Length: 167
Image (cartoon, rainbow, N blue to C red; front, top):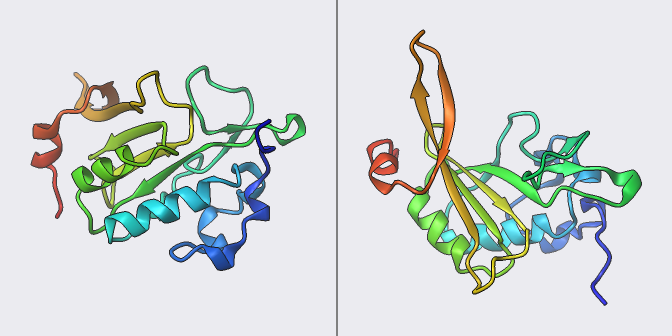
């Protein structure tokens, strides 16, 4: 029998070295309690900062679940967000990606090289695919005919990422 999924409000913060409860936009009651431990472990592995994205919904979203998103939470039904979007101010996305792939707890890795002010990474705790590989993707910023931009989801394109590298 698996352990119950509980909110991150039960997190033992004295065991978390690199994050504080205040960084989670007041959404700890919507976040799966395992997420702070996993991202703290990732932070230790990469040797540089990861910070929760300040964008609304980067930590948890309430409402009707999108078919593929791990961000949605419905505490009344015991469903908590198993995803978080982080920004990487001083470590390249390749290092974050490589270390996240090595962590069996991480089942989804998305790279966002066009985020501001720093590149971003989505981390989630979904079950890995058969064979042990995480789900991976990235988003590219594309400009439309009217000069506006949007994110388009594609496979990992290291040339694109390297062209935007800060570090």
